[in-house]
Amino acid sequence: MRDVGFDSVHIDAVGNVVGRYEGATPDAKTLLTGSHYDTVRNGGKYDGRLGIFVPIACVRELKRQNRRLPFAFEVVGFAEEEGQRYKATFLGSGALIGHFDARWLDQKDADGITMREAMQHAGLNEADIPKIQRDPARYLGFVEVHIEQGPVLTELDLPLGIVTSINGSVRYVGEVIGMASHAGTTPMDRRRDAAAAVAELILYTEQRAAKDGDSVGTVGMLEVPSGSINVVPGRCKFSLDLRAPNNAQRDALATDVVNALKDICERRGVRYELEETMRAAAAPSAPAWQQRWEKAVDALGIPLFRMPSGAGHDAMKLHEVMPQAMLFVRGINSGISHNPLESSTNDDIQLSVRAFQLLLDNLAAEQAH
Ligand SMILES: [Zn+2]
Image: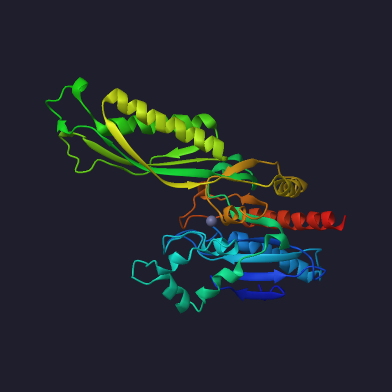
């Protein structure tokens, strides 16, 4: 950031790397952008960091032209979006909206090191975290460029995608309780097979989510505790992860899936327990900001393709206090992510830089009016 000509660069109390390129006037409002610089263990190198690199490239060009925009430009490399080391996500972007939970500081990592100790070791002063909360009135909005992390754009042969919403999600852990019995002597019509009931639920979830077109439903954990090859499963534990582009669609999906579980269990003579473990609101893109991305992508001659984001992003946090919209960049290798095979191309990344520059130009023109 310093090399390309940002006016100020610092690391804040939570570990965000913050660079500012000031506007033409001191009272100018600020456009906020950025993404996370941490990643999952053995992950890819574009997830997050692409969204820091792209606006840095834009500032490099602005500085080269010695050009000031009618708004300030703030690029944040967010700390700890993924939440790998501690059971807390979005530490950096959360702190900017005043959502850093001080109780997290006492959490210990796998080696028994508290978050407080880790922060102090990194030279951070955790007591100052509340001070980095931003005043949304000083900001125009938040935009984020991110690698898609999925196969959609590469299958359509499109370099860029317009994000319509970051999916809302709800997660459950559950257990079906039937009756363990002899696999050889229990006739098929007398069984209380817990695993077969969950199998039906999985198939229902698959069909029900597919029906929406843009919802997703996953049973990622499935276990027959102390199961045995010659025993009808008496218990089956499972997880359920449901996501949709808006809260109403997510809730309708969840209602149907939970009702299906109830029906399946009644019909099969088994019972179930279900605990909701997480619920996150969808973050629909602000229409005006989504349109700014669309205008930029359209000007590049790229067909517009609108899509929800299945993964969570820092933009979700900023969404709570200011308008936001994201731009996706095609990943290659079938869009694989959270994997070292994650990649994109110079050409696609260059297009994302140009889209970002156009967004800045158009926003500058809007501000002039
Ligand atoms: Zn990411």
